Amino acid sequence: GAAIAAGDLNLDGRDELLVGDPGAIVSGAGRAGAVHVFENDGTGWRRTGALFDASPASGARMGTAVAVAPVRGRPEPFVGAAGSSEVFVFYCSGLEGDKPLADDPMNPGHRLDGRCLGQ
Image (cartoon, rainbow, N blue to C red; front, side, top):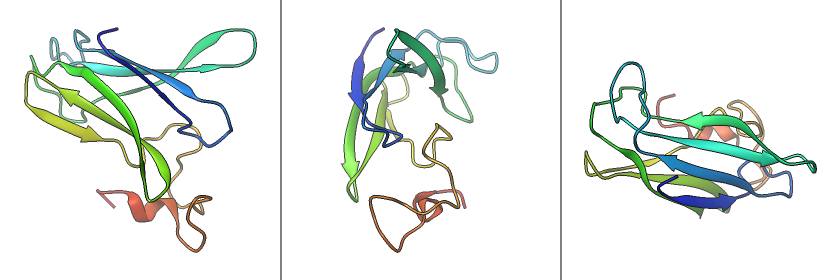
């Protein structure tokens, strides 16, 4: 992995590990890049998902930088793509615990889908 970060993305009390993979092929686009998400189930780490650009570009190299930071009190993944000079914030990532239409446990009275950019 080119970059790593950790944070409790699904609010289960345990941090997930995010590993940047800027060489990943995504939807046929070479070196578009992605971030692999791993969880520790008590017996070891297992890959539980991936974050990637929905419209990947060859050479974007997403995953060259990875961080987790709070947005409205909730940990969110931030991912840099050095080849395209972009930074992605994965609201409503589809990862476990980040389900649209659910109540946001970090912000009473709000729903997680209120954070989704495309809805």
